[in-house]
Length: 296
Image (cartoon, rainbow, N blue to C red; front, side, top):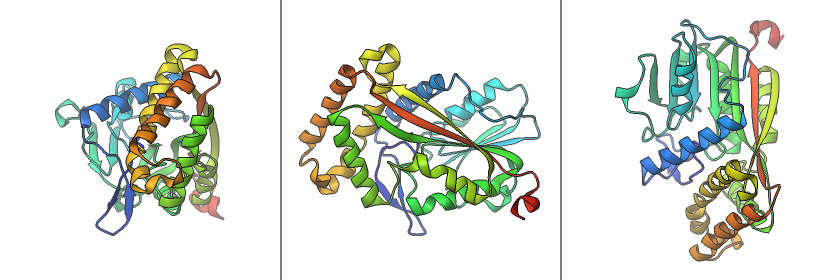
């Protein structure tokens, strides 16, 4: 998932803001996991990359924030015959593709969604953002969406993808409790971001807001897709270990062994509990073609 990957640690930027970003001791392993996760989501959304009514041409530009491995942009380039400019940004370059494998119309940059370049104003026909729930604190979300509004061209579109809800049993309830504690402690919105996105989009000025939720099943009871969904979520939740233990366990766990035991039990719970799933939410929205009239 991205800084953007739901592996968590804190780092202060040059401006003193605390960001949550991925822990990547083994970038190749992280790249493999994130690309498998991407394949999972792509299958759930019918192998569709663009969910907005647009045909891209050479005159268009596309931005992806929290791009991670850049796989979405790389696949987009393969599906369109025209050559729009494709730009991916993240606050860490470790997962970016090697420049030698990039088509001439794709580039990746280290940028923060909280302060995009001023020259990008009204530039992009499509903006894609995925899974920044661990990367942005609650008070940063309005700023981030406002930045995306600024760089979207009039009449252009935005796609925002985040988790919404998860369903299983007692072990998942313990993980949910940890997520709530982390949200309270770090100011993120793990358990409410899916419901808050529409208001952020509307307040920034976007119109034609649409909601497209889909679920990934979790557990061997659901066959191949269930195993993929299970492994994805277990990988996500394992990334919580360090912040949870560093915070003293939040009254839920007392040791690394206990945390690992909860993850192991969750895997068994997924396999044995039909109906275990995670609901994801995809919002699309448009920047008004006539901005002056839209704000009147």
